[in-house]
Amino acid sequence: MDRMIYTALNALAVNRDSQVTQAQNLANQMVPGFRRDLPNEGETFFLNLEGSTAPKAFNLEKGQASFSSQLGMLNRTDEELDVAIADQGYFYVQPEQGDPALSRRGDLRRDIDGTLKNGAGDAMLGPDLAPIQLPEYRNIRITDIGEIFIEPLDAANGEAVLAGVLATVVPAEDLKLTKGLDGQIRPVEGALPPPDQRAEVLQGTLEGSNVNPVEELLSSMEMQRQFELGMRMVMTARDIDEGGARVLQAPEG
Image (cartoon, rainbow, N blue to C red):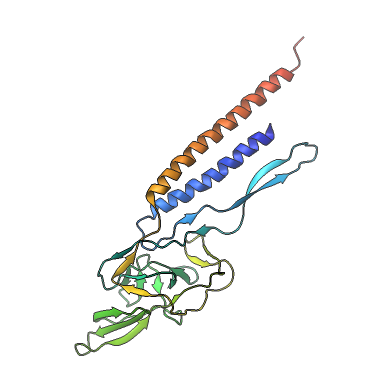
């Protein structure tokens, strides 16, 4: 009977984690470049207790949390500081806290101190992995390899200068990436790969998230049904256990 209860509780724990992941995805469906989180893999661990004939089953998380690398919708905005990566690849960012990371988010802005940042407040990095600083300018043009040309306010009209380069990389296929607790993308092991500028950068375009809200809602409804079934299983196991205890109870007198 214990095994039945532990099995049901194990299923409820997996269900809970899946619902948290789906809620996270739905909450970020409008965030540019957001990568849909995937449920973490798990495995069952059986614990044999001394004096027990039936092992207890527990759910254990296995491996790192993963995310979908499917491309989001590319939307033309014609905003000069909106950029997107056309296919595979990532930008380099420096979050306000933590180590440098990879990102697909391209809604950029020039901060008051001249630092180029994305909509999350992460500083965009150059090939030397230093934050990109932009002086005030009249016009800005970003090339397909991430070069940033500007017309400074103190320069003659039409005089463009190279002010920085958006560092990009197309990671090797065997490089495993994961999202940390801060939501940032980094390798599972080791440091970030060096920039290679192989990603194609599109100016005036913004990539949406790759979350499909209809799929997430349908999956959430299915998870809710599974949760209700799991709770019924727990209640049934309890009723059977209590009934068996009453049958085995010694009669009074």
